[in-house]
Amino acid sequence: MSRRLVNVTLDNLDDLPRRCRRCVFWELDPVSRERAEDAGHPELEKEAWISSTLLEWGSCGKIVYVDGVPAGFVLYAPPLYVPRSVAFPTSPVSADAVLLMTANILPEFTGGGLGRMLVQGIAKDLTRRGVRAIEAFGDLKGQPSRMVGGVQAQLEGGCMVPADYLLSVGFKTVRPHHLYPRLRLELKSALSWREDVEVALERLLGSMTPEHALRPV
Image (tube, rainbow, N blue to C red):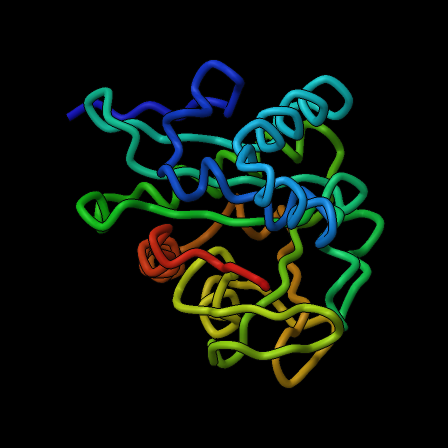
């Protein structure tokens, strides 16, 4: 069984799960997102975001393939490139950190160490680029249809990462909140994870099902 980790580009963007390919929750502000969905072309906005982020900042995602089949992915970027990040009550993301936007391993590929490949791939990439840490807005309870700080969502294991899982793989809370804490992982820690942390990471990514993605109203 061969495994291959590559950067997300315009050429392989269609290898993301279909709902994730069309989802622009993180990439657009709420008004622009609603307009894109009403016009019926959110996938074009996703492509435009990937293109501009690649040109201005560099690699912003990775896809892992197993025997040539896309098995999982992760997207990340500085908060400047993620308009939705300012809508959370625990924003802003720290100036020295990159935001972990979303990640997923398809259910049939969980348990094979792909989570380790993805996140350690990010850590190596960002360390070379002088980034110190990854931060994420954790979902603490995952209750559907709630409004906090302008963020209304139906959370069913979609593109927000459960806070408990983030804590289990080494993230630390830097700004607590009863629903959306902001957590942080120092990259030097990610590069030296123990096996038990890697297993927990695999469970984390496998729990994020793209067919139940975060869909704010």
